[in-house]
Length: 119
Image (cartoon, rainbow, N blue to C red):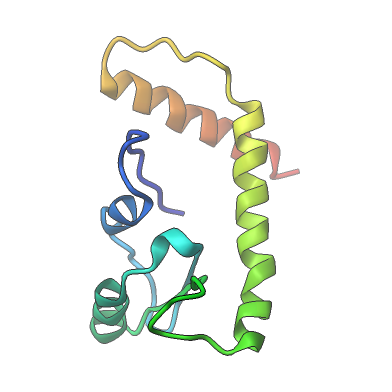
């Protein structure tokens, strides 16, 4: 699992670019409409055979056939549901004096929640 913490003003695609994506060739990365960056998609495909399957807007330059879109939709919905569940578990306020302290608390929280799914 890999994640990056960014502030709310950072666009999703910019946060995506911060990931190292240490994935095997042929891996697929699912994303919503915010992850449409054709240059980044091409770079990942050429560099590592990584396929970015982003949901496309109606006016997209790269259309996707309806059947792959329908197959990817449940994966994206599961990711969105998981984020909603994590958000519900997070406290409303996290007291941290430094940015490193905030990152430490969030990472520890995610680790603790993941232990809960091991049973």
